[in-house]
Length: 229
Image 1 (cartoon, rainbow, N blue to C red):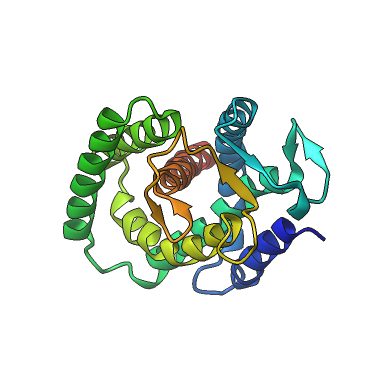
Image 2: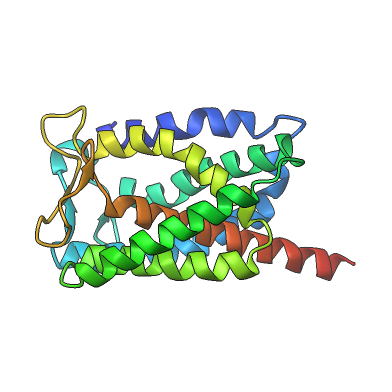
């Protein structure tokens, strides 16, 4: 089994088994969650394929199984299913265990900071394709969510909590525990600012992916509710 596979399996073990916790009953949300994950994955996999083709990032074959889908390592394709699942589990835990907490001030502060930082990076580093695309999408989704996504105030603390496992997982993928990174980035397409070994752009990229899944999952849930009435 490849190193990348080990990272993915380690990530999903606890969220999967805890999905059957009676208070959360995350497994009951699967019918809303998986269609949302798959739809968002299509977009991000297409983005991934384009960036790999153009050398924005790539993969170290020494840490891969050698199986490919759409010219991407099978591990990378599974990343877009497993990681959103894990983070949406955190999101449901926050909603389930802390329903009475008002996260509005935190959401307001985070939204302002994230938008300002994202706009700054996108404008001042427009020649860096990863910086420009990741930051621009994150800014647009934040503005949309602040106005239209009713559970955005639960998503924000969930995302902040998810940063701890995110740094661990992405840290391993970007070389914190290996002699060379499992996933490498072209220095021409990032600004070079990193948290440990993780490019700062990855935080905007993952945020956009997770927020897209959360928004779509809510819309699918509402659709199911309306059709069942």
